[in-house]
Image (tube, rainbow, N blue to C red; front, side, top):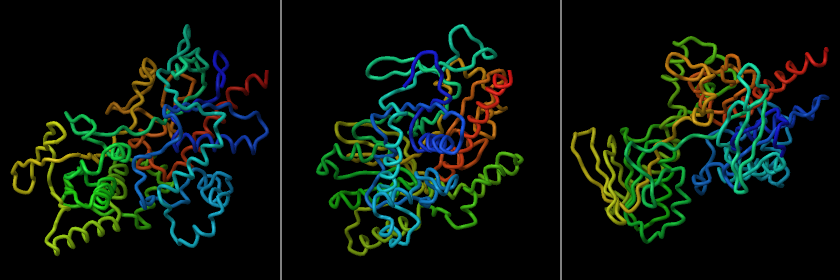
Length: 436
């Protein structure tokens, strides 16, 4: 990878599925074009490629069709498609015999690793981008590239980029005043922390949350800790089913992004009000029915160890040795309660990616709307008056682009649009010199 003055056309910050898909889009543009290939580099703080490793629970399946992979919706002929992966692995016929659109998460993660292995020359793992700023001695009107400080185990490098694509992922959300430790976990670290804990030390466990992760972790603990009491603390009145019916799923179609982006405030409000149940705080039908059946059968046998506290919220968490004391409040009767457990898991979701800290002083050149949110162009580029370099967001644009901002469903199309924008803007920049 180059350092010093020479600038990359684009530097990707983070190398999860979104920026991996961008790398594929740039690669395939180069393969079908006569001009010089776009110079790209990616920096990932993890030591190796990984995507939600701590939620790769056994037998859990993807919630999106395998066709919504890294490339197919943009280029059905891509050599980086899930179908191409299955063919190379010799499993295409066997997968087809499953008669399912939804691979297991384990297999999809293997597919992502397979695709990422094709870009080892453009990715530096164990590398954290600490700062993005204008080069010393320049201003927004004169800078033709951005300056990035990248920290690795070997030291600090300076990297220059005409464009950056930020995809640092979602931020695990914990209740105010609650800190994670070896006994209080967030779902994003579940399997990692579970693997470090002796099953014999887990006689009583609790899971907080009403979404897919909460339900899956509850089922996992009930299966793998046959002697333990498993309590699900649900802020709603039980789990709500995810709407994955055909008409509702259209909200994730590429065309829905245009309808949201160019729609009125009333249009955007309708998207959220009517279609939150496609993705937020909802659970697949099969998981809901399985958990209910488990609870029912235990009740029949008079040995219930799986229980659900509905319309219940966590008010506080205190540590006492290896025990966790959880203060609860019930919205059913208003009564307070307490739960004592060995491990408490918060499957309480994520906050959107917030790039302000990474941008530092550059943030003042980024336009915001009346609610203080970034103004984002249709090509996912921040509105930066006076600054010619592009800052693209892969996430954190739900307010401007709708539900697909941080989801896999539109990754291939979104990354393709960013790649097209970068290449088109490069051509516009170089055109004057060609005509001189």
